[in-house]
Image (spheres, rainbow, N blue to C red):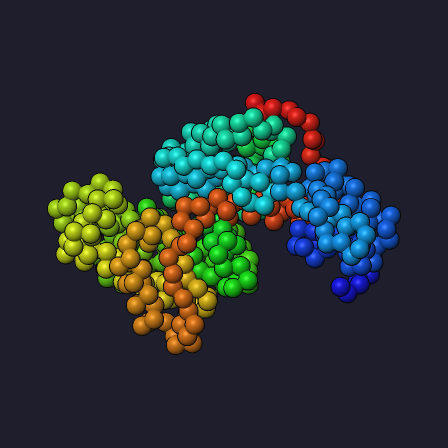
Length: 400
């Protein structure tokens, strides 16, 4: 391994990064990579051991003598609480420090009941999922909500769509009940993060995720990082207008937004207008499987309008993969096929040369994965590990 100047990797946070990535897994490795002295390496490793972020094992390869003690990141050294909220359902979990769910639940909710109803329900569910685990194990909290979010402030900003959530600073509410920093983002952003990290990391670092469910939204991964925009409003694909939308009034106050003409809500509305008694998307699935001509027409028309907006986004962003997720996209293959056809017809030849358009591989689990990584990227960064006051108490206090 190349030797680096000791000053370049002099902190415990940097040493943890080396251990997590596998770049250095013994004390000798750390010394070679960083140039730190043996006492300096020992000091940093001891700190990480005391904070339960690293554990030791002795299964390293032997070169004839006693095998070296290997250092391993301790995913069991804490938990993060995550919740991915949609308009009508929530995915809630307790994850370890590698982002793997330890316990999870799916809840039916009505997000428009507002934070006074929804947030206590989510926090009560976290309490249930923690079970006998002490609350002191909680290292951070991550949540995705179906609203525009000012990420740095942890505040929802979407007056025309979820009025009773507008201007709500969620972190202080959650911090009053659980320890650790609280991170809030748009629901589709966290799903995009999850899909990228679990499926496409190292393979496709420019990705457009589109959620087609009760509503339509998108998350943009650019250069391997989520693109939030100046105030968190990037990815509002649902409020791009389409041609020949029929003059449908959108929830945002504009007319013929793709959300108002191609979402699951719009498909149900159009089928009811044609005389079909459909209450849920499951009813639409039954009609599609039965080969109902009118239902197929409605779904294909939604695909055409969504495809036009996606084609514009592909021309603008040039992603290497477009992932379609959410109830509608994951249920209706004709919609995915229709979007793919329109995009390849209307986008430029260069932007579609190697473009893949695929359905989500994670499904509902993407939001949990994304929320977990949103938290872990911050609390396990070298800067956070080395910051004063970030050493959580390791007492076995039970949660309230």
